[in-house]
Each structure stands twice: as C-alpha cells, then as structure tokens.
Length: 164
Image (cartoon, rainbow, N blue to C red; front, side, top):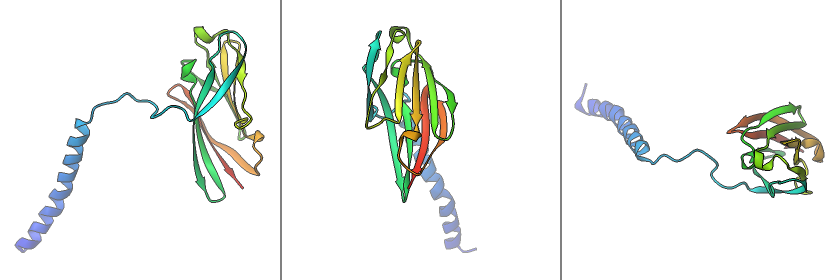
C-alpha cells in the first residue's frame, strides 16, 4: 500500500474522531441550565372570576407547523402557575380534558377563561380543581383531530391537526 493511501485512510479515521472529541469537550464545558420553557407562554387566556381567589390569567405555549392543506398544532397549558400536577381525564378525537388540583392559595377559585379568539381552549375553575379542555368541535373545518395527548413536566400537553 502506498504511503499516500495509508495517509488518506488514517486521516479518514482520525479526522472524525477529532471532531467528535472537540464536540464532546465543548459540550462538557457548557454551563448546565435548569430545564424548563425557553420563554413565557405566547397566548394568554384571561380568567373571569365568579368567587374566591383566582389567577388573573392562564398561559399557553401554542406552536403551529403549517403544511400544504393544513397545519399541526402543539399546545402546553401553564397550569404550574396554580397547580402542581395534572392528569388526562377524558379524550376522544375531538375533545380532551385535563384536571389539575389547585394549590391551597387558589382552592377557593370559581371561574373560567373567556376568549372569542381561542374559544376551543378553555380552563374552568371549580371544586378546588382546574379543568383544561381542548374542544376542536368549536373550529369550523372539515378535518380536525387530536393526534397526541399526555402530561409532561406536570402540564397538559396536546397535539392536534387540521386540514382543509
């Protein structure tokens, strides 16, 4: 084997190893940050209080990925502002509801969010609980469906899609 060929083979092996080593060293040098949202929620639903001590608003992180003929939506409700946990209590392809036991300082809250623009997202406060509901039946579109729902970081997390 010629020296040039041996050099190319050795370079082909060592070069990627050098890149990986540099990436590893750089990653190790990065300061660790606390996990959590990158920014504040981008949608705010105002709470109309009927009784008790209620939060003024409920924040949502709502991301949209458009594609030809429709879009996929991801929504996370910031229930951690008034509750420590959430769980999915009912769902089908059009409606999903999560419940979050309210912290003591909001346990007396009776009220709900009101939004004409985001009427398919609703939070109702009653019986020491917050009920976050996504109701796609309130959207006028021929095809819409909840594609994924779970609780992540103690918050309701849901994906849904809509098409023409």
